[in-house]
Image (cartoon, rainbow, N blue to C red; front, top):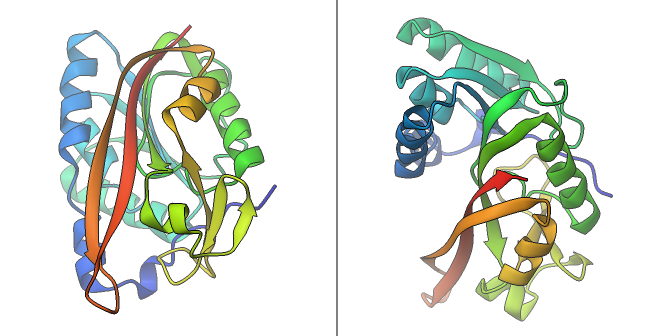
Length: 223
């Protein structure tokens, strides 16, 4: 099993950084849905610079945030102070979450848990299940095996489902686990999957050709 790595926030481009300071529509949708359902305690797993933690807190939820990057957590703490919202923060690894069993009503992990290999992602899912309350909700995203890079095996493979990505925001590169719908249903066998949908993104390669990245987004409840 490979070790988790944080993002090198101090050396990313200004454009990349700006993107990760704006909460996604997915976060706002979950915040409204979860609050309406009576949920209170939310874990922002892999909080980064804190864009989703701030969004949840502004929507009146009790937010805990964890990230392996000390820089990211310090940024979130300063941001929360300027917004006058209370967020419990921890520096920690998603492979071993520093929380008690049944701690949270909801867990939000956006483009986070795919940064592992086939062994690691199973451990991460078990940790998510452990700290989530029975009938609690999760919103997770997975890199898809429909991604061009995975189909063409353009990067070194760690295992049958994982390639090693270099040149991104992760310090010294990191693994990316790619999942099919079947893989996701197997990984979440102890959850009730409420919805899975896909999104495609396209970027130009060095030759100007379109390259597709595909992602699965999953709403589920424990048990």
